[in-house]
Amino acid sequence: MFKQMQYFIAVVETQSFTKAAEECYISQSAISQQIKALEEELDTQLLIRYKKSFSLTLAGEYFYKRSKEVLEEVHELCQKTKEIEEDENVLKIGYLRGYPGKELKEAIVEFSSLYPDVSIDLKRGNHEELYNYLLDQQSSVVISDQRRAFHDDYVNYHLLHMECYVEISTNHPLSEKNILDVDDLKKTPCIVVASQDQQAIEQEFYENIIGLKCPYIFANDIDEARLLVAINKGFMPIEHAQVPVSPSSNIKVIPLYRHHKQLQRNYCAFWRKEKTTYYIEEFVEILRKKMRKSYEE
Image (tube, rainbow, N blue to C red; front, top):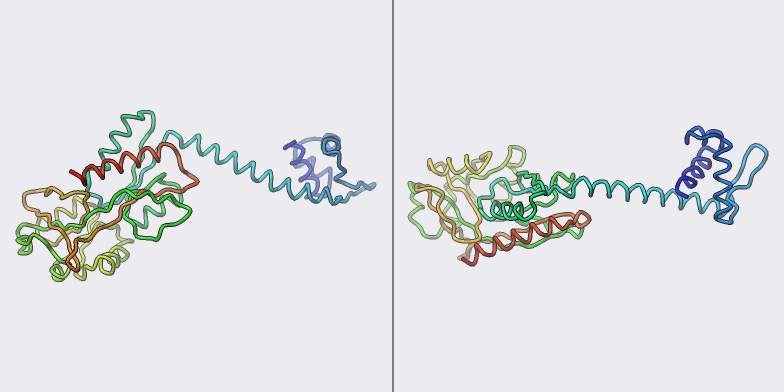
């Protein structure tokens, strides 16, 4: 019946059996026979025929409108089915450009050992870039700290509250402290990993949400940021599920406080509800267990 529906729509929209036949690449007699067969199958008259024209019955008007809606739904169904087939063996993961934790790598290794036929596609980015990766389907799931209110169109899968620290050179006077308050860092540059077009957004977040009112230096990746820390150009804010190990002998990791309380960040996995797959759910559950195990150790 789908073909007959297509023919009927073509006849109505062209107002001509001849033009509709040309559009559908069949003969005029064939399309006339198909419309007649459709009416017989429905046991309903759809067209009132005149010598050189026709008009729609009320039933015909209804069938025309609903046929267009149904065929559009069928087209969307076919497209989504095709997308699922194309994506079912690929897990596209987006994660923060400056994420320093080992848990993500461990989760990817464990997932790959369980599902060796699933390809892993990794993309790094800052918060806005990760959000855009989800919108244009460059990533199936992204791992990030929460900066927006949760949206009903997305699964907002809570992973862990991670505690905030700073990495600072052992040559800096503040490295003698066991705790650093945001007020202690007002004169020391904050080193943030961010692409050039996202620097202003990142600075605004760290200034207004975290409370780091200080000069800012930007790095392209975490290795460059740590090099700047090591040569005493500033400090780098980081988050960890557990007390982190210093990345080198000339860098000290110190808890970051504000108002006498260590700062925390809420880390989540985000993905579109309509794009939920078994592999996404399996991966984020592995990652959640890794993160919480690190926190408990």
